[in-house]
Image 1: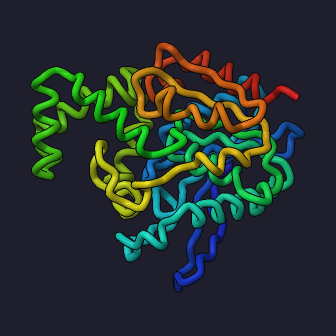
Image 2: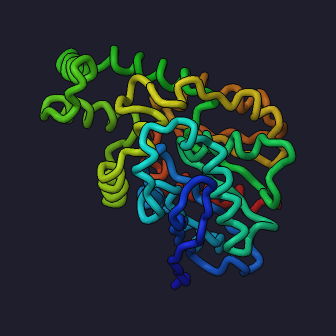
Length: 306
């Protein structure tokens, strides 16, 4: 049985006069000699919970795994007073938190990063800085677009291809802003099952969504309330230029009929030297759920490659 540990690390934030902390959970021995992988969850505004099946990287491959809730989310400090402050909720904040986490856990000299969705987007710009982040050994960009507009365009196309009743219910909710009606929610459930979550979503996903619903500060400020239009400060987000500076071995993953389309990830494949690319042909956005065994094998074996 792998050892598990939960805790919090202080994360001082300039301009915030209350103590802030990052909640984390580790699976396995971080100092076993095998490089630990830090899992960066999506959203923005979700939590680590929906990715907990990655814990099996430890039991299957001996890889220590670090989960954490990004600041403003889950069990980390919430900052509702910063709702709508687009100058506060920026990537640099999350970069600093990540650096603070790995140093605080004593793994800052050698660690891998697996970012899913928004976590991969943030991971790409984090890894593409000059100088390169200290200690980062390998990078996984899981189901993450290289630029935001490609995701939005894909979702627009997918919506137009849905059955008429589903499309009409979603469009009505989007136009009126009434996204809590039974009709809208039922239609979105069908849309997300096809293009995001698949049919095998585990209970942990509901936990992440529950946390997200309790505090929408981060999600609304950075992306907005819609799955189809970005109104927050990520509206014009791009990692195209940053990806040219990524110098660590990188694995790019996507599925079919998802937001991180082949077009959306193309800059990563074009710009990152020696990049490895794996497409999960029977999954949309959540290969971890839909092709779990193959997903864990792909990730685990790649992380262990010398």
